[in-house]
Length: 357
Image 1 (cartoon, rainbow, N blue to C red):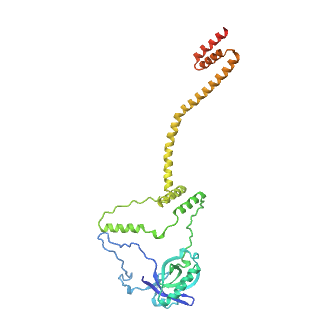
Image 2: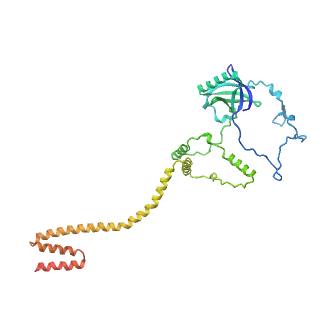
Image 3: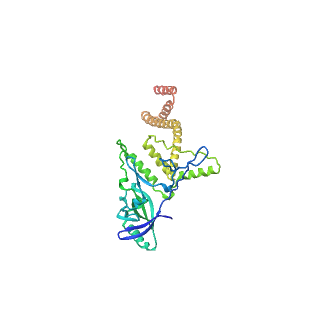
């Protein structure tokens, strides 16, 4: 990797020669501006507004615009004469816990490479000291004509430096939070926790830029003369106010589905739905068969009642009459009389005649 700055790390009285290398790269796809009528390239030219002539880079300098619009020229020689101790030095000023650095201050990231064999020993010493202390180093350095703030930490076996914004460059979040008081229910927090647990952790290496890949495919298709099919974009809701509980529940289900979890639960829910469809049919069948079972119960009860009446009648008749045969006949006729109204009257009259005889 090509170095963009050469200097040294100042660690007390220890000086560590290093090279500064970009730790990140930009993969964004850049477009050119063209004239729609003929496809010609549109270029920006630097023109002096006084004489309206185009000027080259060698004719362009720096100036500070005052409040009244006056231009105050500043040359590179003027800037070089300023006392800047960090012009070629990354000066460590403190060691602090990493959580004391506000992530809002994070800027560009760089790798610091030991510059030469003599730098290997002090470089390794600083790296191991940072590892053992579990701290980061706060440093000041100069890059591209201005002094900056940086944070040094260990990444694998390399010392990395993150450019930091100065504290006064961080804007206060005034007027950003919701103005009205909002109450969050415990049920909503529970669902939010469930969604966080379902999403869980992620392998950062597995994340990629889907939009950039889609743009690359679009460019390749247009370059080969293929027809480009418009893709269907999912409706994200368009910022509509929705039921928060329902949205959280749907989010949890969607997250489980995307991670291949909850398939068994989904199948059991489908089974429950199928059973729910069958239950009403079973209930109807039971309702139709209920009269039969009720009739059976009634006939059983009637039979038991008749049997009881038979025993009672036999007992009473045997005590009233001395003849066993006559009492048995009377009991049988009384049992037969209970089966119908007309039959009962006729058979009841016959014993009365016999009794009078």
